[in-house]
Amino acid sequence: MHSFDVVVVGAGAAGLFCAGIAGQRGLKVLLIDHADKLAEKIRISGGGRCNFTNREVTPANFISGNPHYCRSALARYMPAHFIELVQRHGIAFHEKHRGQLFCDDSAEQIIRMLLAECGAGGVERWQPCSVAAVRQAGSGFELDTSRGPVQAARVVVATGGLPVPKIGATDWGLRLAQQFGHRVVAPRPALVPLTFDPQAWAPFAALAGLSLEVAIETGEGKKNTTRFVEDLLFTHRGLSGPGVLQISSYWQPGTEIRVALAHANLADTLRQAKGRTQRQLGNELALHLPERLAQTWLALQDLPASKPMPDVRDKDIAKLVDSLARWALVPTGTEGWRKAEVMAGGVDTRDLDSQSMGSKLVPGLHFIGEVVDVTGWLGGYNFHWAWASAAACAQGL
Ligand code: FDA
Image (tube, rainbow, N blue to C red):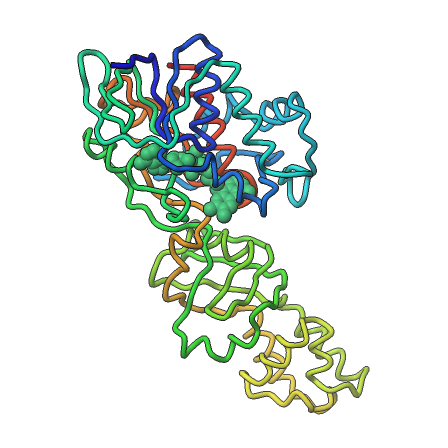
């Protein structure tokens, strides 16, 4: 029987980072992953350049049944810490948009960095290797793995979320949590494109590929409404783009989303244009919106695109701008796990300790990264949670 201080299951972002720190603290660490290839999610992230953190990370950038759970880990492991590590490994990076940091070259550099940190900690890695069972034994655990039985004082579960099953995502971590009596917040796809009834969507399908900045919101009442100002992308089946991905994490099935494709003050601008130009309504609107959207929208509102501006009625302008500024629609679903970037829900934080990420029910069992009910916004926040929760856990092992 092999014996280790710590077995980390899942060699993705959180597992690799945790194993490296724990190893460098002098612990004998085994890192296990069932996938053939290492850290595929890091490799495909950020379009291959890995948006590895964000300059500004606060608890407000995360969704969880307990919004306070992530506070301690985020306060102890900040973006500056990870940036310092990246710089120490000579990885060049740049800021793309709203504090989002990407590798200049390739996400592979982050994987190599994490492997080097594991190497510095003498971490042993078994991959591919699967774990059939985990049992409590004495004050620790016994694991049945495809490479034989293993004893460990502590087990860290870092098996991630359910998105992109074809590259190794499983619900193993959630099932293990339940096996040991932990509650699980029902998992659902997040940061995911939204879909609509095909018939109702037909008039918009022709807009596929068109993108524009919008304000997008969901929820009822001021306190429960979440709003983002980001790009929206029309697709053949519905809506995508950063703004839609962000709002999808807050959207509840059966409820509406509201999109402002234009600002309400466009009505004043169009009314003023009546006295200034003979331009046709369609051409005038196309000065403020992408042309394809302008034409489609006028047709949907039954307004003549060819009417000269002086002849357009004020009430038609009001109707048009109102429909653009408050486009309310009810998605029928999402593109699901195949297209989701992250899992909302997961191991219920009520059963975990926010200092060590350890179970309150089973001493020595820890959960880190996406398997936990902490879900970040788009923009490097999910990797930052992987790093911060891994660091908090490794310090406490
Ligand atoms: P992660 O998924 O990284 O690792 C889990 C590991 O556990 C995997 O290696 C898996 O093989 C292994 N595993 C699963 N089940 C197992 C089992 N039964 N036995 C053994 N091993 C098992 N985030 C961000 O901040 N910036 C970005 O740019 C992106 N981009 C991005 C693009 C795409 C396409 C996706 C799908 C996701 C992103 N993300 C992202 C999200 C980010 O990738 C994700 O939140 C982190 O990888 C989560 O880290 P974890 O270590 O928790 O899971």
